[in-house]
Length: 286
Image 1 (tube, rainbow, N blue to C red):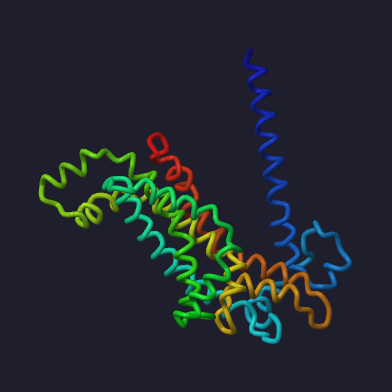
Image 2 (cartoon, rainbow, N blue to C red):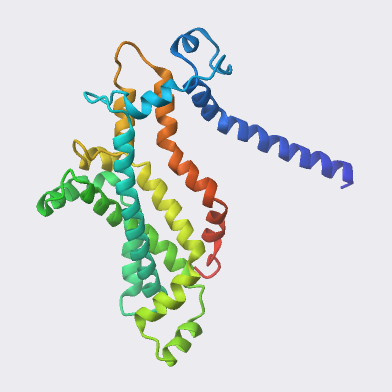
């Protein structure tokens, strides 16, 4: 194969990648330009055309005054509800997953493989299966329709995934490291806090991105287990899109959808390059 064929093959690959990237980013482009137009321009213009002049009123309305059912407070209170749900749920599930993965990978005990298999089984249980049992449990605990209840639900459901991530990462760490620490007198928790956690940055990033995305974008748990004043942004976005006051305002809907997606986009832009690196770490032995 000569150099010309190599160049043509490379150009074809890049051309296909650019084409697929444009197709993938097309809906985001339409959402963005639509959110910057007024309603008259949207109804009379081309959906792909750039706005004649930038208009940020739809963004302001989506954030502070759009109607999400009977309330017209915009997405702001629901955005902060999601923040109050996501941050503790991500931190708690990541910490529990790290500890579980450490135990299952480096401190084998009778039945540990069976326990790990049961945790893996939990990864494949559909959300719908646990709706009624979880609702009853939250009612018994007095956590129904509360932010704390939603945090607990996401922690319980997310621990299976975080344990899997950390366990597969920790099995690649040599057992000799644990033995040496034990010979030096380091106890169980000291080895975890002083040795394993400082080595876990790549997989922590993976887990945080995974959990943040899953929890922030969740709609089913949010609509089932939340109540007035505790609904996350996904539920509010659904209510906003399905509420029409004086005609459909597509620019407000598009602005609201982008606002709801911005946190996950930000997380991926900041830490996305570590995601694949962390997933592949420990893949050989895991």
